[in-house]
Length: 398
Image (tube, rainbow, N blue to C red; front, side, top):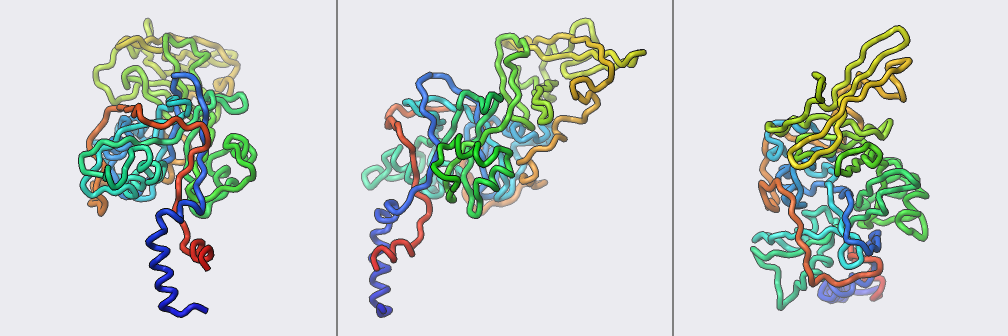
């Protein structure tokens, strides 16, 4: 047995060398999709809020629109002062993300301005560990000769996948998800819908096992406008979510039961025109049902795309033997009331709360994206180092 002073010396020695040694022990896995085109696709990031944060702070962090974050999570778009609403620590959000093809790999790259209190670990934590401290260090060449400094603009690489927005022939949107402690592929499948074998196949796993910190691609069945005869517009919306279009004048909800898009005025833009169908008193999304001798006549004002500020719509008339043709419930409630597997994990505070963590940006509503031309060209699985156990290193030395 070692004496206590010898063990202390060993621990000090391990502590000094640990930044190098520990990275060699194990790495978290991340699903990477190779690509060759210049297009981008709709994708999602699963984000567990690390500390109490305003919606505006989260939107700024990921460089997306506040209303797009609300829509992706089917949160009422007309809540007062949405940017100032507080999400409590450990709440879970879906962050909408444009997944681009960069140097042959699907990924999203955004810029981040370093704050005075920042460290690489804190920045990684602020992004829900979707990017590791080591990845940030490597991508930006952070080191003794190029330290992290306040006001510095650095590149943040976020994981994403497209897989042609399909899964087993069904329109789908993929979400990048960081595996949490205590989770398994089975529990993740039960929470979000895909089977264990789907997760194994999509993520190219050799065996049905994951570890905390691994990043999985999770498919969500989605509604597509591909066959809806829209003017010069294509939209794909994950089930249970909303997407804004037509300069935020129109919101389109994907009904989970039928995977059909239901579009209606968003209610968040005052200066929207052409929302009413011609020769009708119906607005986009409105349905008129009239009983007749054999069933009912249904008139629906449908969204048909937009061109600049002009919004296209058309009136569709049909006759049905009953008033729920094709399983459509015309008297259904507001789309925001529909079930969503993630929304129950969101908790809104009624008023701003002080945070013990420094805010990572404030008040931005507009989306931007920046590409660093110096990013290396990866063609294999990208990994990042998670937290490591000191016991592993002790065993190595003993």
